[in-house]
Image 1 (cartoon, helix red, strand yellow):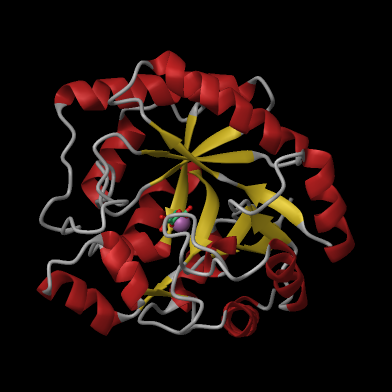
Image 2: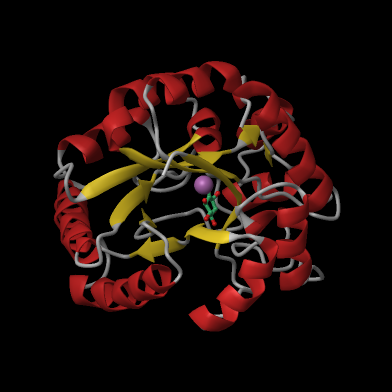
Length: 294
Ligand SMILES: O=C1[C@@H](O)[C@H](O)[C@@H](O)[C@H](O)[C@H]1O
Ligand SMILES: [Co+2]
């Protein structure tokens, strides 16, 4: 598989904040994804849970499933609990033809807390947390490999794996054959990281990419006002590539040079009432065409 372009449904209806875009229907979302020129989608909470039903909606629109988010609780719950939920998630994605499973550790996470300042209260994993996380992820990687799939770890604002140092530690302390990495440009810049430095350091482990941009003024406001992650989302800290502060051209150069093969997913959770998801999807598709010729 070379590079294919997908888009995340979170721009139409937000899984973390369901009131954002609750009026947008599943069929409107996937039709507009296709109309905007994407051939892939990640899974949203309005998507049918039955693989055959979901395929009957996606196939006429030329859409495939790139992946879906899975919240692991390896640092706060027994491994068996996460494993049971993970197997269900894996089997659904396998039935949909996905090759990678997006995993993010949500133990101690503050990303879902409306009133917790995302920078000031960022969780720091203990040594015990790191042991539980790295061993648990390697076991999930083995479970994914039973279906010839990989787990791609989503570093994320407001969690114990957010910064370059934490990403470096996770990669160092896990087996490359069992744990791969998702590269999300928006979360790196929001956290103050250098995306190109992270890409270069872990390019051999990156098997899934989220192209997400940042509105610099909104990012500054989140810091100044000690806002939560979700407040930042509502205020528009995230936007589509080409609409924010990130120059994707040098990032694309690294990806192309590295002969990356897999999905690049446009993702920008923001208020659909302020940022029409279809128009923003179209703008993103045009920007990506301009810088990548894809
Ligand atoms: O980047 C993302 C987050 O911002 C968001 O919180 C998650 O729901 C998405 O699945 C993830 O890809
Ligand atoms: Co993401």
